[in-house]
Image (tube, rainbow, N blue to C red; front, side, top):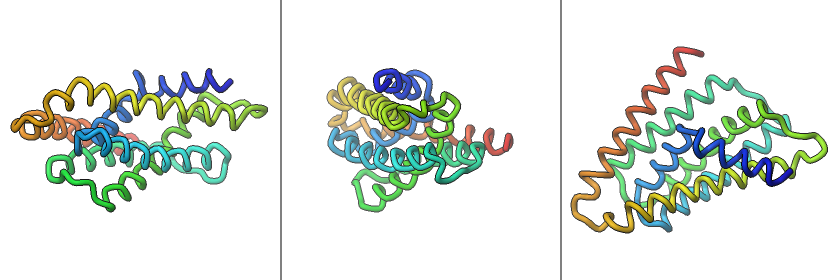
Length: 184
């Protein structure tokens, strides 16, 4: 059961979770140091794990449409911030944590559609969460290995790569936010 849900969690992000992939890319491009990306990803994981568990256990409910709109806005904000900020501050981690709480609700919505077995609820929940985390870390390592490792020290890296990609991500996210808002 654990391995089945681990696979489902991984696939929920790669290749199916476009919005989640863009959020992780935004975390990565904030500061392309591997340590900074992993710290942000870990804070995000801690937060989304919390709400994923609480919502899956039925402790609170929410409007999936509103959450999806807020998720898109979180991507917009984090990507846009990449063009102005480079240094990891405590408030950035707080923001990533808060957005992680919201993303956890989105994961819970997707997981509720799939369903969790009553007899192995926690095993499946933990497997799904580990799958999501593996996908996130895989995205970070691929970005680091193929982009940051080779180019992050170049003088043009921020202006020619990070800023345009971050602005592109923020435009996509803003489009999603408007689209999702109009369908609520």
